[in-house]
Image (cartoon, rainbow, N blue to C red; front, top):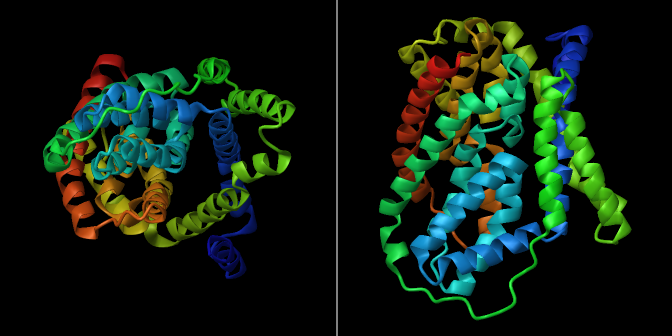
Length: 386
């Protein structure tokens, strides 16, 4: 629907062709970055990275559901941060289902952790979420400065989620499980881990050199694609599917539609609600407004709407918007595309997702994680500087 909507706003004159070109040019590098990261994540899966993760979770849990939850939190947080939230939802969630079944553990707490951390744990790096890529481009921060400012908010938000999960799913975690049968663990794909590590280093180096970090993502994806093609683990068609061209077109068209809506009155309406400055009350208000808007219109259009209004206040306000649109979607299904994808995967595994339970969990996690993350951001801005 986004592509026809973009054609409508162009055809009606709600946005000029030059303005649409400018919006597309601004989103172009972000979309290229997103495509490369999506391909990189899929190639990591083809090389067995997520199977190795499943084996590690099973061994770490040793038949104890609470230890399995810790393992899921660790892996989901790291995978979301490094390979994006799409990898955590689409590639890790099925592995978590299989691991819980192997141990005889109730899957609910571990599977819910996948979707919550896909949103909350995507605060750390510019590559962790499409919203991060947009905020990174608008903030003017380097890759390393962005990560340094968001490290503490990332940690405290994950900690808040874990504390609530332990209490909320206490009965499921107290239910018995069993140690996995002795078996040869899946081989750890050392080459893949080395490529991912080099790609992360490349993000930092290219950003410091003033080069678009998308080139580092492209290089990492190209190395794994070449290896996968040579070993016949993948095909050119599979690589093209991993880039998810329809989703990239959706992002581009949505950017044009949002630009038209913002230019035709929404900016003025929201401009009175977005506080200026980076005082603690201002940051809290900005994050809260962003979280509410993400649940009303989804986090991607919310960040496109709010970023131009937050940029004049500086990078701190931009990062407060990011905290709101990343943590806030855990409140409702409609908050983020990742949550909608996760719900579909849960249904494919014959696990019903109760709306009331999802909302109750969100009401407990979102306010706590949001407030603590903003407090941590405020402390980081004073310690490191924006």
